[in-house]
Image (cartoon, rainbow, N blue to C red; front, side):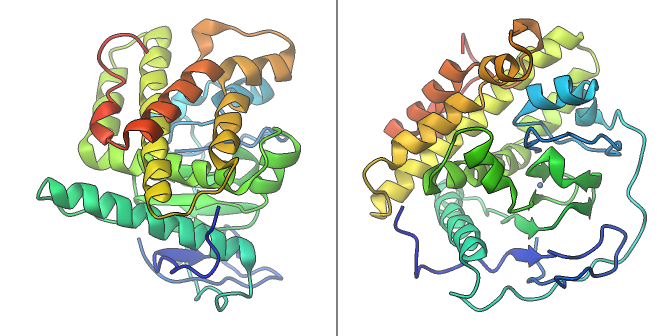
Length: 309
């Protein structure tokens, strides 16, 4: 992916090194001040609860089987621990060129902003851009206290995406999904959840879930996640129009979609898959919907709520 030297988003809060309770750790907190569904990384998966978290887990199977807690409880604040009240400080990102991975995130976020501003403007609507928070180890959010072992997540309560950048090393080494576009796919998927929050998909899910059985909620969650995958594909199409893609990039993203399918993750974790617990879709479904968005470039083709998925 040809991203170096492109304009960065200003909606980045760099809180790396900042303790979740508020103080600064050894790295010091950095980041701009602007204005979050969850991707557990498959590590040890610590589970101090996340109070009020409406986030939907991208690597949901890992959380369930690594921690024993049903992560769909997060969708309506089913866990009990809450983040301590504290002020949040952040500083500007390092100058461009001084922190390559932070630059990469900021550039990809800017490209998603350009895409969705364009899409919303075509409908006569404004696109409130989400903030993306870089953190180390743990972070306070409007959805509660989040641990890095849970991975990147979107928090509808404050409209922010949260990511510990060490996740990208885990994506490569533990999950077998290397490459710039695999990394960009993660961000574009999370921003897709922000779009769903703005368009009412997430609020409707949370409202309906109150009347659903667990299996029904799982099936609905699959449709929510596959739509976010499709939106990530729409972004990849846009990146191609901007001449940002290189040979092999789409294959990297499709490989990432395959590696994070519920069936693949569960077999990796425990040797077998339990379809009724799938919350994000099979590897084949995730690849199919990402590719659909990529081929069409039209968010209108991302309706995962009508018919079969």
